Image (tube, rainbow, N blue to C red; front, side, top):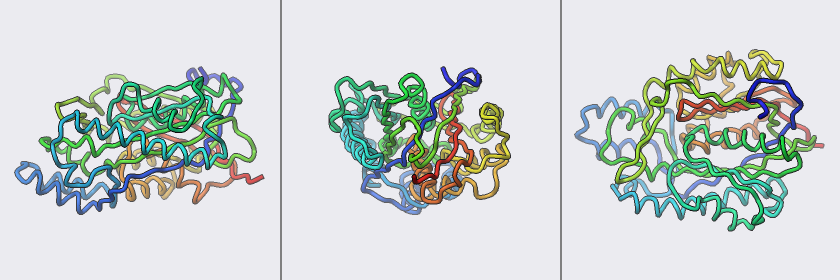
Length: 364
C-alpha cells in the first residue's frame, strides 16, 4: 500500500477539488447553548467550571438539525436514529450534488464513493441511499467508514488516494455527514460532557478526488500516513446507551498530540521536506489546545492555522466534516503555487491521519 511503509515508489498524485459544505437550518449562538446547558444541568456539581470550559472553546455559532430545546429532550435511541436516517441522506446528497458541480463532473462518472459518519446508524448505510439519490452507476464501488470519528474525513481522502494508485483514471466522491446534536446525553454532566456540548456542531461536506492535472486548483496529495498510538483506546471513546451514542474525550488528549508529532515529521521526511518548509496545514478543529499542539509540534508560523480556528468559531467542531470546511477556506485565501503542506486529523484509537501534498494554484 502506498505510504504504508515509507518507501519512495512512484505514485499517482491526487487532487482534491474545492469541497462543498451543507449546513442544517437551525443556527445557535454559543451564549444560547451555554444558557440552555446551565438551566438543564442546574444541579451539576461542576456546573460553573463546565460552563467556563464551554466559554473557552472559542466557538461562536453552530448549526443543528434540531432546535436547541428539542436537543435537550431525552428522546430514545430509536427516535434519534430515525431523525438521523432522514437528515444524513438529505444533507449528504445536498453536499454531494454541490461537489459534483464544483468539479464539473456527474454522478454517472463516479467510480468510487467513500462515505463517513459516526453519529448514527443505518443498514444499509447512508451511502446506498445517497448513491441512488445522486444517480450513480450500480457498478460503482462504495466504502462506508463509521468508527474513526473526527479522523474519518482525512481517512476517506487517504482511501481515495490509495484507490487512485490502482485506478489512476477513476473519479472518487468523498462524503462526510455528522449530526452530533442527536447524541446529546441529557443525564451526563462530566467536564468531558461540558466540553462536548461546547464544541460539536452538525453538517455535511463532500469533495471529488481524482488524478491531479495542471488545471486542478487545490490540494494535491503526494503521500499519506495513518498511525495508531499504542494503549490509547480510552483517550477518545464512546458507548451506546438507551438514548444513543455517548462520546467521551479524556483530558489526556491535550498531551497526546505531542506524542504523535514524530509521525507527522516522518511523513514530511518521506516527501523530502523538512518541517520548516511547511507553508500551510489543514488541521482538524479538535479544539484550541489540539490546534495549539499541532502548531507547536510542527513549528508553524503564528497564524498558519487561522482557517482552522475560523472554522471552529463559525460552525464548531463538525467531527469528520471539519477537515473539508478548513480545506474549503484555504481556497479563499490560497497558499502560493506549489507550497508544501499537510492535512491532519485525530480520532478514536488514538488515530492520527495525515496527508502530505502541495497546493496547485494554476488556472491554466
